[in-house]
Length: 347
Length: 269
Image 1 (cartoon, rainbow over the protein chains, first blue to last red):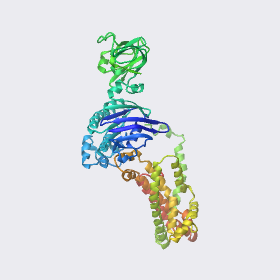
Image 2: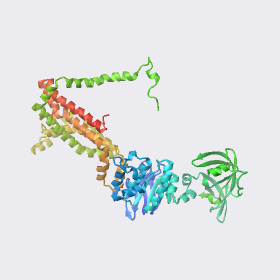
Image 3: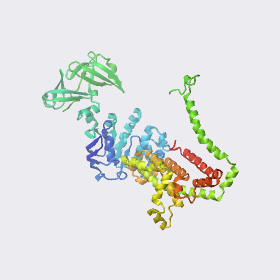
Image 4: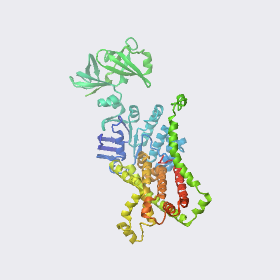
């Protein structure tokens, strides 16, 4: 188990921490924008940088002041940091505590046929897998990964994401995976920590940080673009009645009547209908509006709708089958249902 | 890709600046090459070879080679750690130390000789102490080595520093995080990757040492090195008698360039 307590580091233009973090034998993904301190956190844990304050301990042993080479923390760099003068096999062999296991790691990471090649002749994905094999060969007690998938093409990234999650889980050691990509963070992590300006904003399961963000920053960073101010009209059992402009919405949450809250709805949880087509939506939590614009984003459509009864634009994502059924165009009218459970309130 | 040549470039009547630039530069090229060729061709090879075997020439060549190899070795022994340190520290102290290292390169060699004499000359504390223990720091091979090391060692430091800097630090961190000590990391990661650059620096230092004249003549007129021998032959017997030794030095200079290009890291390019 990795325990980080009140860790701080001060730079000329950036203050890191204080950060508190506990990582069991699980995968913790650290998600944050560039310059938020993700790499600093890894450097501090790995021992590349000394902290100004706080403590780091691994399985009960204090790591502060312990040299890099004695920490037993495997660190996988963004670019792999493979030794260019050694073949892939020599790279792994350099680290291996047991040379007989080189073939095992090569097989596990599907790099057996590139073992005798040098890093510059390997593709980005192969380099990353060799780097990971090298780190695993050293038999670390803690695995730290600094955006190893960032430079890869999307299809390879998707495939590696799947493979890596299974691999990390099988290691039964704490794994910290740093990324600025929300999909990678939530796909790989058992838990996800969102960092901003050197501090952790929220730690939770992927579904929690996406559906129940603690702050506006976390909401935006996990794709919750729909953030609006609302007034709590009434609290009834487990349901809050909210007002946004002339729209009334029910949310399955608790809030004090009369207060102003920030309402947060993930675009993927909004259902879209055309006024004349498809199922007739319930009146509850149903709003109408006009499509302002839409664009194709990966394998889904992102549609921005100007609401009729409130001065806000609601963003929703629609999968191709639904999109094809609903002949949606800029300027056409739509009705949308927001499930009460999909409405999250930020205080 | 942009086309490298267009019609207008070769159109008649257009002034070709590139040709003019080359023709002006060619004057300088001739100025480099013609004297060298003149030196090599000025005397029949038979005569040169015959003079090469003269005892004073053999003695000067032996002294020069011994001293230069020693200087290059000393420069490497002390220069590599300094170069590594410089490559791995940041800030003001790095700028200052680098400036001190480069100082002997820009100092006129004869002034370097004077500076050294004030520290290791026969009437100084160090010179006296060494002499009392049987080691002459002037008028000796030791004096030649001191002079050569002073002027030549910056080549090792400056070139090796650049070579160490070119080794990505994350490779060293990666090695250490794999459980390897700093020494193992240096020996198996940093040194092999920086080696071509380091070797280029040692080669340059050797070439500079073997051609050293200004500081050497201040510290050790005897035993004669090749450059001093050329000077003595020229002043006492005339230019022709200085040729054989000069030919050796030209040969060493050409060999240096060959080594640097084979290493693929000519820091002068």
